[in-house]
Length: 58
Length: 362
Image 1 (spheres, rainbow over the protein chains, first blue to last red):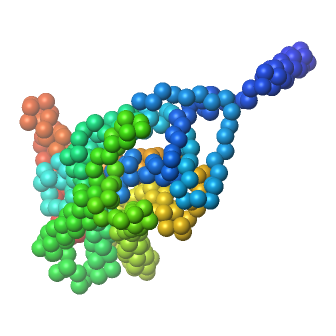
Image 2 (image 1 turned 180 degrees about the vertical axis):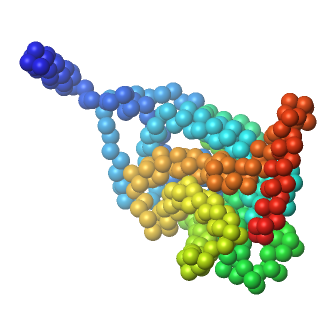
């Protein structure tokens, strides 16, 4: 088990470096790119997308 | 479809305090693919499962119980409820663009709503039938007669058709010039004078459909089961064989009601919150409306799931139904000569089932 301790420390160090590098480039973390998978709708009115326009219920 | 936009920064939605102020909504892009897939899965399962139920109830050789007739009608309502799902799957996949014309927009919406009401009304009558059979078993003979049952079924379908008429009148296609899309939505311009008046119509229809299509029936079912629970508890130690069969059927129907509540509650809660926000009785901020917009399609999927779960519930809990279904399937094979050696056994099983059915007297 002592043999793996340096490996654990090395892995932890690499993780920290990756996080610092990401912050340096001014990018924020976007897990699985979920933030980029959004479709934006600009609505002139607050309720331009009523619920009844998407499902067959009133 | 609109091209996908990419953002590298977050943005917050805020309420400017004005009713007509704009909002920016961001929808999760995979929903346009995920929801149609869910719709099609529900369609396939609902069509096949409810078809089997209808076939089994119709072809059952043993005497039909009152509950079986209600279950058959429930299956018919569920089947018709899901039959329009491919249209709504395409609608969603195209980014809420309706390419099927005004007629199908009206008809498919009307059919869905008729069968939503019919489904919940059948379940309510099923619960009331159990209440009569258990709590008033000695004095409910007339109320549980065939004529009364047929009358109640007629009333169910008539009332469902009537309650769904507003959607037939107001549902139409609306062209959105900004996005070059046509939506299938409610258009109240013929009966409204201004935007406030339209808000009242939207809220009124939404709340009334939730009250009549969920809240009141669910309360009625709850009352029935409270009385049934009291009666069963009181006589638990003196259950006869016939009463145990009643209790088994009671368990099946109770499960149907619980599953119904689980599937439909989120949908009606979200819809009612949206309606209340039109009346300024619920939050009206952009963030809240955004949450409703994101959650509502998935709540609708969960509501549709109820239509394809019922057949599996029968198969798991109702031994009589399962026996009948297996007999019918095996008899079909026997007719083709594949299972001739088992025909005598199946015949004996059928006779045994019929004897048990007569003994049930439910």
